Length: 132
Image (tube, rainbow, N blue to C red; front, top):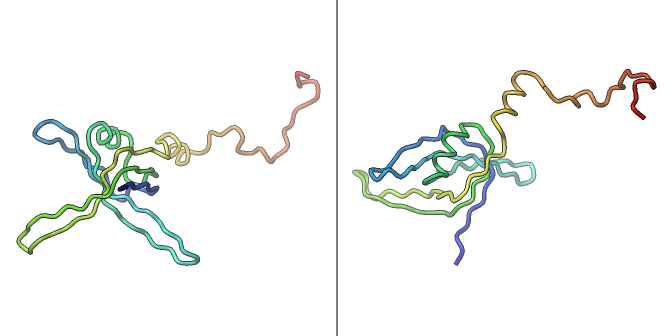
């Protein structure tokens, strides 16, 4: 049998990092994944659970709004509460790939540092300045 989840979306919540009594890292966050069917668009919000180094790295290097790819498996948990039996469906992440860097967002906010931003404009240079 196969239980494999692969999704690309943005964190819709901050990543909450905690440690178990044994000292194992666990992080929780929600991912928003957009779906398009013709002209219709919908967003699915899924809780994601990360363990160990994946949890620590995600909490340190990513945050709300960042684009990520999550690979893992779907898990359904249940527990008893005052209102009866409760269920949650979540993704247990094996791997989280960061698809945006913090640097690229800072550049977008502080102005472009891309030397080729104006590449469609002619360059004012004389033939004598060319090395060939």
